[in-house]
Image (tube, rainbow, N blue to C red; front, side):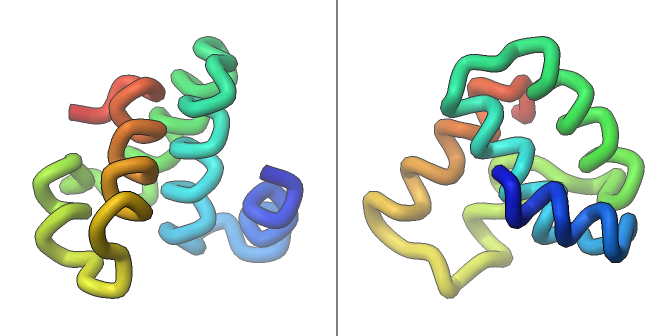
Amino acid sequence: MRLAREAIRQRGDFVEAHRVLTAAVGMAGHSEVAAAALQELRRVQPNVSLVWIADEMPIMQGSELVHYLEGLRQAGLD
């Protein structure tokens, strides 16, 4: 989370950092922080969805992708 926050601080439009932060706080169960992170993610990437991530992020596969998507799901992304 710390590195994602630092990346966002340095470059507020860095979409991947917003996605990582949202997934991390979602998995950590910080629902209020996750909601705020998801709001910011949607600001910088309005079209983001679980389907988009699964389809457009070929670097992630298998259990890594499942874990990432679960964090985003817990943050409220659909």
